[in-house]
Length: 202
Image 1: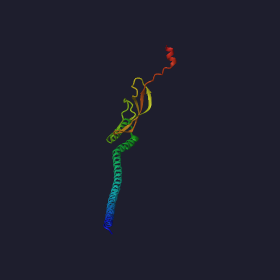
Image 2: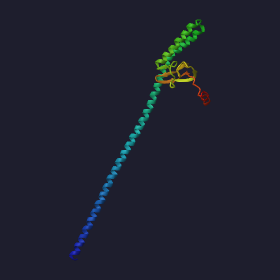
Image 3: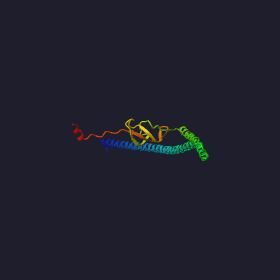
């Protein structure tokens, strides 16, 4: 084998060895990259599982909180009802006493005064609970507080003024429990002029 052929052969062998080393290195890099990606995937999967577990705990806590609030509200409503009933029981006692005395009562004026006292006791008990009667007569019609049952032609009063309270309304704080049923003033509307009337005036 001459020198040129030997050089070519050596060069070829070196190039092949270099290519093999490059391919091996690329394969190693790829396997390292793959291992890194697999580790990251496992970490992300574990993190997602942890978040899901936390979310489930949060959902369970929220459901328990809603149940607790519902129980507390029910207990509060029972206590409020109990408090109101306790305040109304003495009034019931007074009514029973009034009915008993009415059977033997000869003084009607005293009986009426007794009933009047019971009535004011009842209003006072409602007032302590925040219940107030709605002002009606002399007030301008308010659709939020008043329910119109009838209108009265009255040219002397301002239109929509409440003239009569047919049934008292009540509010609990700022909430309407029952609208006041009222009669309001209305003015007579002038009849529309037709064409014949206008022509006759000309």
